[in-house]
Amino acid sequence: MKNLAIAWLLVGIGLLGLSACEKAKVKAKARAKYEGPIVVFGDVKTIYSENALPKIKILANEQLVFQNGDVRYPKGLHMSMYDQHGVQTTTLQGDSGKYDKTKQFYEAYGNVVVTNYQEQQTLYTTQLAWDQPKREIKTEKPVKIVTLYERLEGVGMVSDEAFKRYRIYKPTGVFPLEK
Image (cartoon, rainbow, N blue to C red; front, side, top):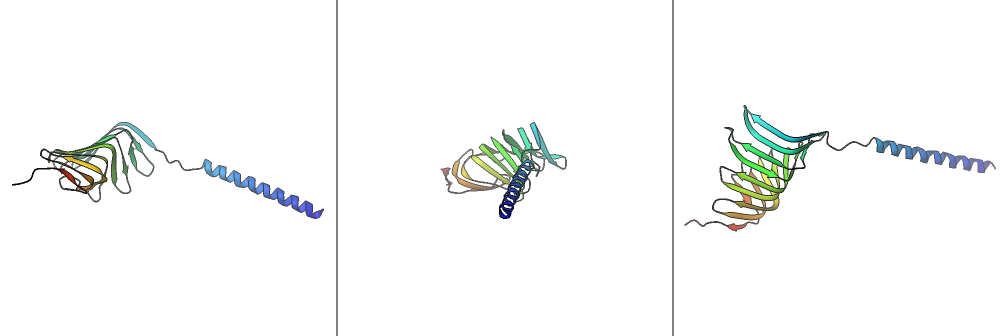
């Protein structure tokens, strides 16, 4: 009889322990960290300047800002870059984009178009990254670059951030031969 009472006591303690574990799991789920945006902006115009001259201007229909400083542009973005005199040199537009604050890294997705007005060339791709610390633009996706005199295509590309000097990987294209 004594053994039976001890067995029932142990079963009761076990059930209470299971109940406590379940309650702890529920509390942990209730305290799960929120991962969504902390701020949502609509019709955004952001201008980064240096010495009172614009360097970068970003236009977006929607901007999501996260706790860690990352930014998402889920409804497209249009970015303009300016030279040291405040003259617009390059534009980038995409169907969506994001900014990783820790890496200082922008990415554009979808129908990505980059136009360099000084060089009169336009880049078309589906994904493009701008690495601010390295001051370079790159992609591993198919690219097409069109100028007044040539059309170059390939898979993968790296460029300086002004899109003046670039290297296309696996290139093909049509361009004039010098005599």
